[in-house]
Length: 477
Image 1: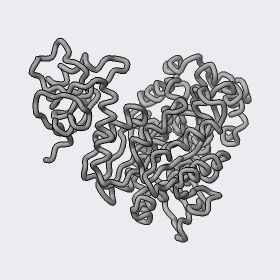
Image 2: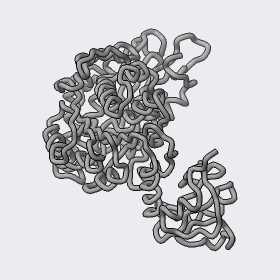
Image 3: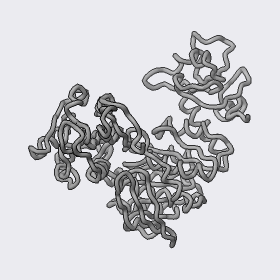
Image 4: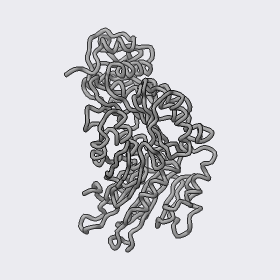
């Protein structure tokens, strides 16, 4: 087995010092998930990673990347000593990128980054050796960590790049040096750090700043700020590939949500495509067509990708569907749970409400005879000065108006709750935790239940409470 990093390679990349020869098969920043043979990177975040170096070595780490030897670590321990651990991790990432011939895609967007990254991973791994970021590793340490973990013989790489403040995307794109850069969409997210949507679009456009010569920008042609994205591509001399309902390169001709699947008709590069996703959602469909555009731009087969994309399912907390069996003794006594509790802004909430509105509840299986469509909504965070209006105005959403009941948690969601008609207004609580004890009364067998909110709203605790009402199983069973 060829090691991921030898001590000589790591020293050359980082400029650090190592008094021992070692070889690492992986890179870890967390002793809880560290595997034997990993290089442990002692980052400082909520805790100082140097406090865990001894534990990492005891668990079998090949070496540790540190600024100094911790007191509880033996003098002869295999350490790679550098001036700055985060900077050294970045150096490893750049060195890993430099030594590979892989085709690299970088993805950003206000909504759908992680789901789109996972879609692209699902289709590319059928056409070659694919390396992609874990979870949402898309920030100043997540991107270099993903690159540092990349084997040299990789064929395709998918990098997710996010941001919370201006100036964060460009250095990460320049580190990744993508062949293809994709912007899923630009929406009201992180507005607390930007004056308006145009400012967000300008930052998202920076995903193109690291494109290699001859690089390709795959851009959403439907959004109001598409001109900002396209102008940035033109200034860089990037080739533009547009996707969307109004785009001419990859056109979304129709999207049909039918039960648990989404059927998509599209036209790309003069060819017609008819394919499906194993999950409902217009927003998923739009990004899926973008994925086909990226696959083609990387040199992969978009036709094969359109067939393989049906195997993709959303990551946990991002629209996953599951059945909660509330009574194993009574056939059909269950509810359907849509777990979308990881992130929220007006655009993503509207997309999730469309999915819920298209779902079919089951009658005559619960305490309440009629099955219901129910939304449990937590605050949408980081929306800036118009956050109150953005919450209140969701009451006018056409899909929300079709729902039977809406429960809300958080001070911002109170504004939506107060704007609801009496017939739709369920419970409101100051925090999501206060809804947990009420879970048995919030939902019933036969219901289809969406739980949605920003991660900081902690509405995921309601998801866990609903799961505990019964026995969990995937929707497809």
